[in-house]
Length: 177
Image (cartoon, rainbow, N blue to C red; front, side, top):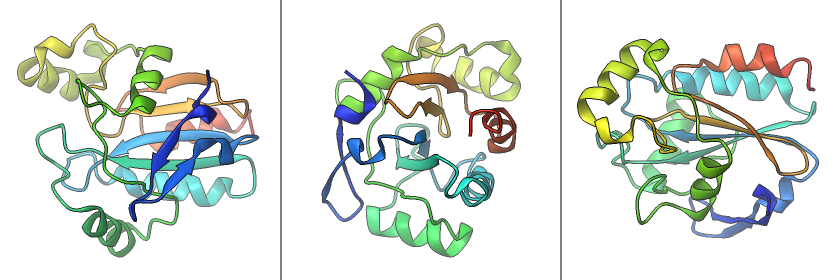
């Protein structure tokens, strides 16, 4: 199984096969509009524009599981992304990334790249340790803006925790693209 075997829902409710991205690297990100990390949209958009046509596609999945920081409807989220950050990469329908109702794609991503979330993630580690201590040491997505890099064949390459800025990822991707 690879990421390309999954179908996801667009913000408009249509089904899209991730197989459409075969041949390109993917950066899959759970996003939120009312989070302290929301300004990462700007970095993600800059990365998207810088790598357009070079083999990287960024896709976002809104999620309201972390402090209810993505309360809007899919239409409201699309409007926010467009008007606030001029986002041109696809932002799909809202999903859950953890728990019994987690989207199958995210169950797969988490199992393929469990992450390495420790004290070196500073303020976010402290926050998660206080608010979601049961998540520490598990494959769960810890917070908004967790990023999964997928290779052109659909295999998960790595997981970037929320504190890793898009700019740092761009520097690492330069040698791949």
